[in-house]
Length: 80
Image (tube, rainbow, N blue to C red):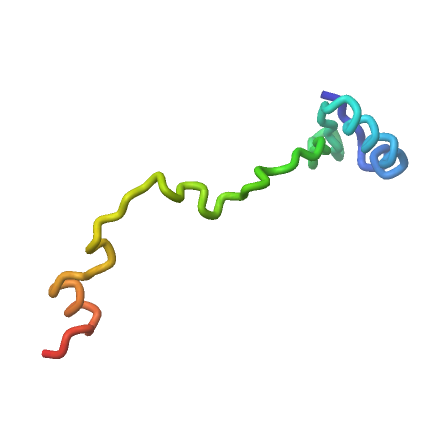
């Protein structure tokens, strides 16, 4: 993996972005020989997203969200 200094990265940002985009290989930008950030190619996420991704795959019991008397009392939900 190629490494560049911050100064080099700043001066060559457009070229580095083009290089990463075309080669699909990340580039590291660092300071004093220590890596700080990594420039990586963009990869679009799952267009369907995560919300609802398990719809129809999981079954919940009919009483799933019902609390027992002990739980209800501990939250002050039952009149004494």
